[in-house]
Image 1 (cartoon, one colour):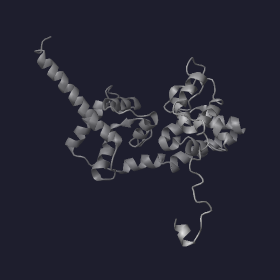
Image 2 (cartoon, one colour; image 1 turned 120 degrees about the vertical axis):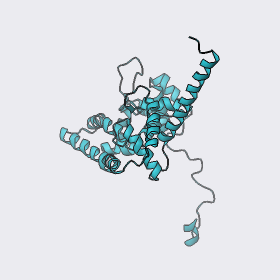
Image 3 (cartoon, rainbow, N blue to C red; image 1 turned 30 degrees about the vertical axis):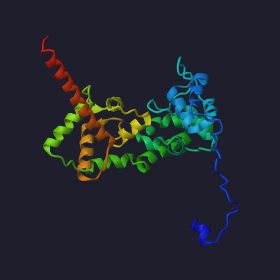
Image 4 (cartoon, rainbow, N blue to C red; image 1 turned 90 degrees about the horizontal axis):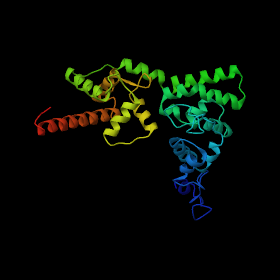
Length: 283
């Protein structure tokens, strides 16, 4: 509107020309289209939902490029990382849409680099192999693209920065606060492994009644997993709580989850105590 008024421009059309215009993939898309991808094509349900949401009715074109898994189920669609719904076919399809490098795939197509840097690095070998096959790379070219993508994750996506910044930020918590947070951490780490895994996070969120996708789980992990090893250690949790206390961090879903998990744990203990008292404490 500013350009129209400042330059005294006149619109060529009175009505919007793009109102109702559908983007590519929207023409035959339906909310339940992913069911056909599961039943007719043989994709895993999570993968089918991801493809339908990301590609619309072009998901079937993507699925045609998927490799056989060699399993009874799913029939096709090899995941490039076990924790995410991205499959090999998406990389081949990305090449058809002019993706030329591994960075194109992890940052601009799949966006995995933004969701979980560690997962992106773990998926790199498979991604580079598929790109090399599609683009006819030599061994030297494969190595260069792999190293370029690795450097991108380390420097542009903060893999090295996060590790360094964690070591520089001091833990500023009282003794009582530390003991309280250790208790919360141990409640989440029910198996006493010494760290919190994706499975632990999923279980804790289920206790609070919150259902999240695999990508959201990794986002929660990524906000606190500063050394990018795919798990949360106690010192990382204490570092986060100290950062929240000092104001360096405003909010953490992991911290909130830990607080709610402790409340859930206390309620369960209270229920057991009441149950024993009502039964007279007998054996």
